[in-house]
Length: 381
Image 1: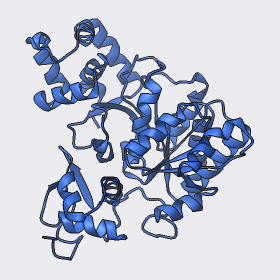
Image 2: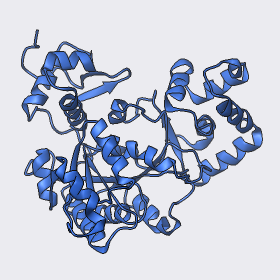
Image 3: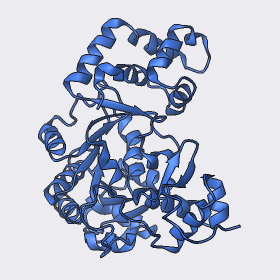
């Protein structure tokens, strides 16, 4: 594994300007690496109009040797690494998002993202009943080999991470600040447990970036983007949890909602979501059954490889594999050949990637991982 001194400081430099992800992605596609972007910047990229004035100012200030040296020290001290949207190890599931993060910083094991994961979210100022339910559900799922993704905030997030760790599976925390900072500070021990137990911390914010309020609703799209489905444990009607729900719906993800006490203000948002058609559950088995993961030996159990499945298990998966048999195709081409709706197709593609049967390529292209052995039927004409 590379170290910070091999160039992650330039990832931090490029991320420090708070540019829209699309602009950073465009720069990376054109120049290849953050270090190459910096070289181009020094050669006159600052004269181009693609970067907003505020971003240009930040890039210029942070190109100073003092800033780079300080940031590299933070990267090294906290063992922070990074990858970009143009790297081969970028999470395939995030490429389906409307605004995928162009750069992700991480601590821990990035292989956690290849597991079967579910997102769990809820109130920070959560009730005792909500936290107890979150811990129980996360623990039940974790014992079946399912990883939990949350935001390492207080309340439901903390209970979800702790439950996952106690159940024996690694958990993923997506933070709203640089990974050199733990927010809230009371979760230092939780951060340490996540890493000690083989988990992962992720952030699109470079070291030194503070936990600003607007970061959190924006980072929620990553929590849902990495997960097969979203679990809402406890939410008031007006809460950050509802932004996660919206991200999940935009991404075509299933939303499971715990009912909670209908007389409690803490669960008002839950019951509104249930009335609007969210999926009802009370136990982990409910979720696993609805996802088709219950009593499935290829899915249940510790699934660190996540590539053992070699056959389609649903008509939708069969249709997608048949469509891809001739070779690489784009999202719209697969939709035309498979006859699936965009939401159903996105969900099916995600599952096939999790199973290791297909791989996502740049430009929302897909291909079979092993065309010779994964599918036997003739391609659809």
